[in-house]
Length: 278
Image 1 (tube, rainbow, N blue to C red):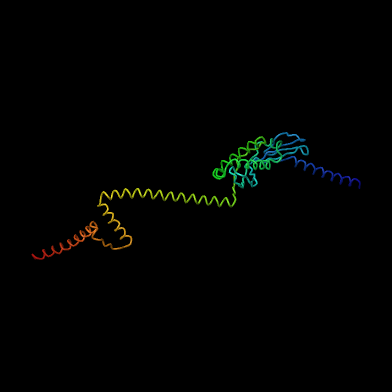
Image 2 (spheres, rainbow, N blue to C red):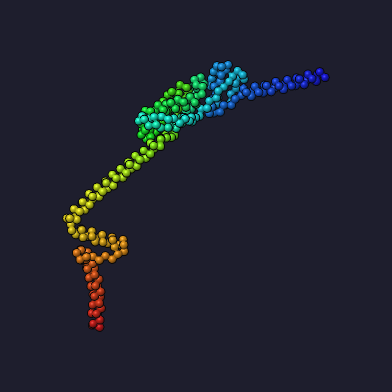
């Protein structure tokens, strides 16, 4: 009886030990993906960066912190700022960053993502205050590039690289939007009036040249009258009766009728003459 109890106790102890060993082995084996790196600490001291692939750590003694090397998008909360010409705007931006040195990040900054977002927000307000509204609206990419350069210079010692800053939205007050719309409408009307005036000026020069040409050649005036009458008749399907004062109009019509009449009479005469001898 005692032997059986001892065997049962030994079996239970063996199972417990086996489970402990399995759990320790499982916790000592880590798989680091290609896009990640891990910083290993042994008894609180950094022993280096490990990964990617299959890595082994000593349970209880070692600990690791993983860092993603891919580009991260950090949303910067909407910031209200005053431009150089004292116009209040609300800016919505995003920062693109990636970890280039996991060892520096581990020993320099605790939470690098909110740290970068906070500094980017402050830099955004500072840069917006150095430009006027027109520059901000028309050169948005240049402003974003300047913000990215300042933020990158500050976070490079942390082991982080800022690849870019995107200004996603610039919101203005309703009154300012209405004022800008009115200004744009006035500018479009000004350009339209200038275009119309330029066209009229060019047309007047052409009319003046045409008038000088017609003054030197009266026949050209009559031909232009004929052409105008023909266009009117063709467009409205009309029969034009010309006044006798238009000599150059009535003359071609008379000649045409005369030729038509002469052809008919000539044919009749030829027929008559031919029939006589017969």
